[in-house]
Image (cartoon, rainbow, N blue to C red; front, side, top):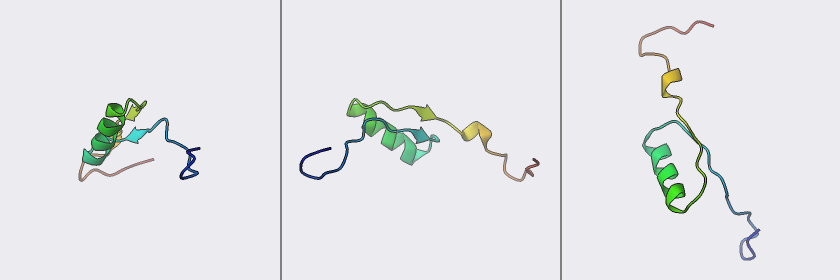
Length: 54
């Protein structure tokens, strides 16, 4: 924990998706030399107008 705040430091950040927010978070973490596992879920999204069956 950091002495001033009492909060643990973030060591790894997982980013789900590849949108602008996720990309910005990943880029900031990489610049800070943090580990950033990326999980792009865009291929798992249904096409617009399609019906989902399970």
